[in-house]
Length: 77
Length: 77
Image (cartoon, rainbow over all chains, first blue to last red; front, side, top):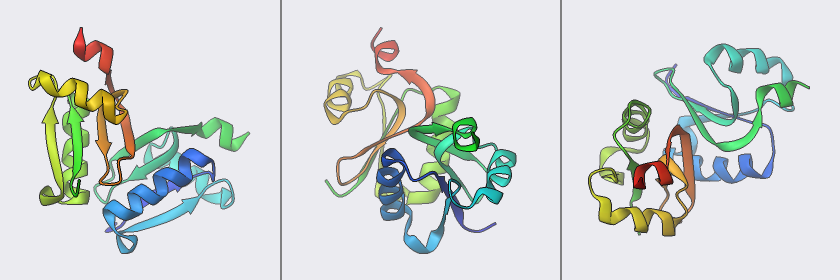
């Protein structure tokens, strides 16, 4: 995995964080996944260790939970 | 302000996040401030909107609270 993956659920906190992360990391270096819409990637996010969104999974596989928009269980519910 | 500022307090969560952020953003693009040691910058961090560390303040002045190491009040106490 060479790109970071930014998981979000479309909430205002997520959108704001997405803009900041894309500005910082560069649009070419991050894949943005809206797990509220692309629901079959929720399980992938959970396996990566994502507990809440927005979250950034680094190329090294570390999870950075950024601010707090929604818990994964809220997104699933 | 053209650099981001990463505020931390030396805790393991902070150190891990620092490595990730430096890898993602680039060492030349972020100033790292240990507010547990450089205590006269705690007020600056608070004014920027930092509620907990580790946190990244972007060049646009937005605050990204990353994971959760310690609240500012814990660092001050």
